Structure formats: C-alpha cells, structure tokens
Length: 297
Ligand SMILES: Nc1ncnc2c1ncn2[C@@H]1O[C@H](COP(=O)(O)OP(=O)(O)OP(=O)(O)O)[C@@H](O)[C@H]1O
Ligand SMILES: [Mg+2]
Image (cartoon, rainbow, N blue to C red):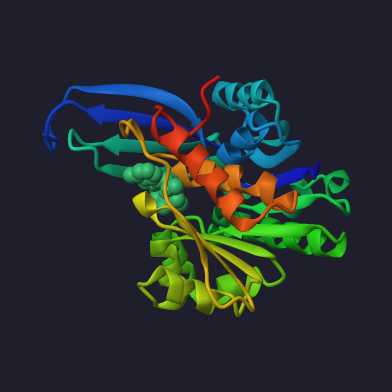
C-alpha cells in the first residue's frame, strides 16, 4: 500500500446554523457546534478511516484547541506531524449557515500561515510514497515556501504528487499562471468547476479539463451533484461518474475533501479511473450526509 503524505491546513470549524433569517446587527438563535477542519487535515482523516497509511504535516497553536485537534487526528489513525507555533493560535474558520442552508466562511489561518520549509520532516519524503499538497498551503502567502519546498522534496525523492486548488476566490487572487507554474510536476490535479474556471477561463468542465491536461497528466473536475470527471493527457474522451444519491444534505462542508480521500487509494493502487471516481463520489456522499467535514468517529 502506498503511504500518503498530506501537507496542508489544520483548522477548527465553528459551525453556526441559524434558525431564522439573519438579523443583521442583532441576534439570531442558532445551533453552534465545533468540529475538526482544514482541507488538508480533513483529507488525511478520511484517508485514515479508509484504511490508508497516512501522515499529515501541519502547524498548530500552543493552545488547548491545537492539542484537541492533534489528539483527534491520532484518533483517526493519522500519523500527525504538527509543529507548535509559539505565538499564533490554531486556525479557526467560522462557518455561517443560513436557515436556507447557504454557507459563508470566515477563515483565520492562525498558525497555518507560518508553516515553513523547516517544518517538513525529511523522513516522510521517500521514494514510493505519495504527496498530496493542499492548495491552501500555496495560495496563502505565509505558507507558500513550505508548499514549494514540499513539492521540491517530493520531486527529488521520486514521489508521485497530487495537488488541489483550495478555493476559487483565493485562487483567483493568487492568479492562474503562478499556481500552474508552482505545481508543475504534479501527476494529478483536483479542481471543482469554479476553480477550473479560474485556472482556464472555461465554464465547461470537459473543456477546462482538456486545457489543464497541458499542465497535468491527469485532471479531476468535481461537479457538485453531477459527480466528477477524469481526463488524461492523450485520451480523446473524459471518464465521467455520476454522484452517489444523497438522502438528505446535512452539511456539504468537506465533500470535496472526502472525494479526494476516496479517489486516491484506488488510483494509487492502479485501479481504473471509473472505479476511483466512484470511490470518491461514495465518500463525498457520506460526508454530505453528516455534520462537519470529518468522518464520524
Ligand atoms: N448535491 C449533491 N448530491 C450528491 N453528491 C454531491 C452533491 N454535491 C456534491 N456531491 C459530491 O461531492 C463531490 C465534491 O463536491 P463539489 O463538486 O462541490 O467539490 P468541492 O467544491 O471541492 O467540495 P466542497 O463544496 O465541499 O468544497 C462531487 O463530486 C459529488 O460526488
Ligand atoms: Mg463545491
């Protein structure tokens, strides 16, 4: 089994689900719950519960929250290599969910913004292992050098590499060109439709994927309720898989992270793309039917 090394962000998600329409500048009753989050740490957690051998490299604060997040990762079976920041707090994201289910996120990266190349344990970068780099590490300026160093170390040690695109707004601020340049050498790119549009200017998933195969041998586009497609450099047609039916959308947070974690193990084992896509959609559906972005314990 291929060991997966995830480099990325670790957060606490404070999810507030409003009962009524938001009363701006006043009070609105809500259900507020705290969850482990951070795209990179979410992927590592889902991978671990899927039975993969997985390490996570990230940065936390010297606070109780950071300790809880660390223990939580261990509980999932992740080999968590967290560096403690002496000043910055563990990252927190306020997730505001309106009574209609619309999500707005206010994200404070905290210690994640100081992840540095020295934080990367050399022993994890070995030939035969796989690096998954969270796009947030690259689009956030403070951690960019660490992301670039991880890519460099992985290339030098002959590891295979996958990258995701973080989120469309910060990706747009970063710019398509630098992002594509930095991630050169990755074998696989994960993007959702909005991110694919930022990178290529194309609305159509298939057209965007085709453009992206000029940079990446393999490209995945996640298409919400329409599932996902895989496109490979040199192939005439994409492989499409429909989304798994979902009884009730409880919380969409982390669907994309779960998708990546479902996709990677069969893909690394050399399974056909349709099978790997289906595994991604299956795990994404599981994430959607449960509160929080992490697997249920
Ligand atoms: N309404 C839905 N019904 C069923 N499956 C869904 C639905 N929305 C998303 N999915 C599944 O989740 C996967 C990832 O969702 P999406 O395309 O939104 O990616 P993402 O934007 O990276 O994720 P997120 O919105 O969590 O950041 C999809 O490929 C699909 O399999
Ligand atoms: Mg989405």
